[in-house]
Image (cartoon, rainbow, N blue to C red):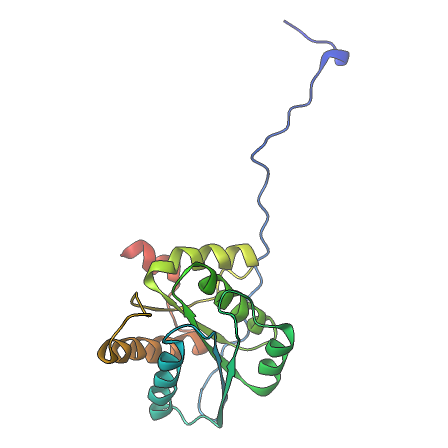
Length: 192
């Protein structure tokens, strides 16, 4: 049956159109020696142990000019803009932890993206169980190429030996993130 112009009906596609910003990460470093390292602790259980262990391990290989520690007092919220600005002003690279549950993972990734947008290569530590959430957060926030440091899950109830194993993972991957040599996470997840 044919319709005339008066009988035509507009139909809207309920699926919509997804549009994502895809901002690039900040310029990667050519060398890490002599840089100021910022450590952002999200106050999760064992985050401090992992971060301090990682700093000790990284410092064996890299001569940092200084290491500055910062703590945000809610692991499930983004760091305050004032804290992000202070970290950006006082450091050249950043290591932040830890994303081992839903809200803390998203908040850590958002903190890293905020720091990247201010020009600081940022290594955000997440666990294997939250790789997919990290991928979705990167896409939703608009920085799909942000590469996280992915360590074994869990973190909250691990022994000293397990902390040492995760510190070794952080030491290797954080350097790759800051230098821009880390393989893309989506590719690694697909290969597993």
